[in-house]
Image (cartoon, rainbow, N blue to C red; front, top):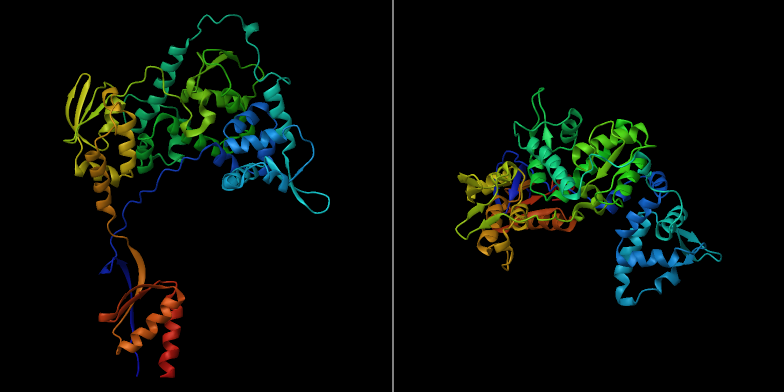
Length: 477
């Protein structure tokens, strides 16, 4: 019996057949790598040069897992490679999984080098440059990491720690105000271009930059994650700006070991590093009274930067300001235009007072935020991390009614999953349908079947093989 088959390109989801919908905004998660993930992406020559400075080696060491740190310390004063079998005996069998993960980290960062010992036994050795410079960092000695400012005399315009904290916060908020379109916020052309290159803003037809969906997600991150993501984008384009990536990375790690409130000299810095210092000044990572000043002060943001997206400690005196009620009302005790703009991203503002904003979380406001790329978890994280001290004492901090409903509103947009497929129907007999269905299932390309109506859908990639099989069956019958 001849088999008649008709194929048709369709989108399928959950067994209901519909024409392909118009493409909607993809809500990709903003990727924020930690320090080790970033370093593993660098080329081996760049990593080898980075390990030539004690500050870099110490910064990398302190962010390693505890088991990896133990492995480093056990080999720090060994000049010869160790057999891998001996290294494996350092950890009990129940911790073998953690040991394998630590070994993978050490090999990925090139801190351990595989060796072949006499007799063909596999072994490992510590990176020689990393070993020597980590010794210097831990035991002392070598060249000073920064120039002494005693020859410059006392600073008549010295800044104390509270003043540095205020400066860092103000500079960083200028960037965030610029992203949300505040007319009073102005940044340099280099910084505006960096925001566009990072995908946080876009500029079309010579118009002023406007925020993107990635920018909306960026605004809801906490300050440490924002700053780390921003610096990573800067480092990716450093070489295109004519900067030495190793030099500026070493300087960043050096800043992470500086003392808050102490001034440091710019003597001996290259032109590339001086230009980088001016960019850090605009970001709020360092304070320099004038561009030509011979000293600068690292801020709290710079000191904790090497710890990655979760390294910056909370500012002294920082307090939450948001109260959330079970009736979906938000009371924000703040006069910050930036914080009000952030709350307005996912809620409807009802009332505005000098130091209080009242807003309502609604289905429409949450789904509008989700359409712009913000996730439900980011909204919940924003509310939880900025919770008023009265709410912070509760367990859980946010009412479950609110968190569950925000997640449900997000799921309403994800009930159907669309994928391409090829439809086969109009089989003349049940036997013919089952033969072709079983072949598609054996190939692993069957996506959907409806035996009662003799319908089946295969993947576009598997369609040619299924079609050829059908032709052979047709000729043989």
